[in-house]
Image (tube, rainbow, N blue to C red; front, side, top):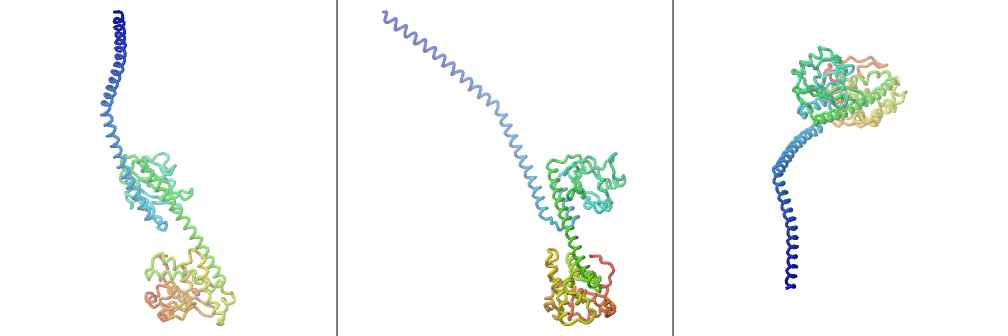
Length: 431
Ligand SMILES: [Fe+2]
Ligand SMILES: [Fe+2]
């Protein structure tokens, strides 16, 4: 009996412990289930928020893509236009191109203008979206304009007169008339060569719009491109002025040694440019033949004084020495990067159409066109200039002689295009 009751007690305790363990386990399980339920509920509640966040992100992406696409299009247009720019094109054309591009690419801009210094004053070299006729001849001063502190600056109501304005009121009125509408904002860029301010570029908005950061960046880029171009142009001009000064002093040296040819090079240059104009050559070619004329006898610097200035008849060997001047001239200009393309014109300026000239005895169209032109100008000036041993020939007689020599000494086609007035014109509009 005792054994049975002991077993019952043991079983009872086992049961009790089991119940205890079970209830502890159940409590944990229930707790976990509750947690899971809460988690599910939280996730369920956050689904619409996530859905909305996803939708917003998608929208933002689409907007970014659209912005990026527009930006790409703008930069493509920018690159396309830049590729068409050459430093050799004129300042007005270049700056006009930059301004057009600015108005096209900067969406806020309705109008624009470029002002450049010219000597002591300044003027509008290009205008977009304004009445050009009213302002194109205005004499301006750069100081009248608000100088941008940085590369680019935005002004409110640029034509609003205040105590700081130095622009004469009548100029301001004309500019307002040219704009035709109220100018709300202006984005200004300073054009400069080194530290020197040479002008301004302005883009105007005629409605109450702000210029975006992207537009400011594009403007900065256009200003920098313009400044690079203007600097290059100034350097090229300085170099070519220096080059021309050197050439002219060489020619002056020659004229000092050979006083009877005083002014000869200049006249040959002018006649040759007129002939080139009559033949329809380009402005660039007219400019080049002018300089070939200036230089055609520069090789005489290499001929001894005694021979060059001999008053009487020349001995055959002396004449051979004189003839060398066309080769010396060719060699001299070959040394200059800017003048070497004139070398053939100089070498052959004493060739004759019939092949009896020097130094190479070239015939007809074998002779460079520039040399055929120079030969006519040279002969006309030699005939009409005084020499120690003879009086100058009358211009009409000299021109008659040129005509007689057509097909012998000179290219008959060119002579056929000329008249006496070719050599008598006072003013040269194309030089
Ligand atoms: Fe000559
Ligand atoms: Fe000459």
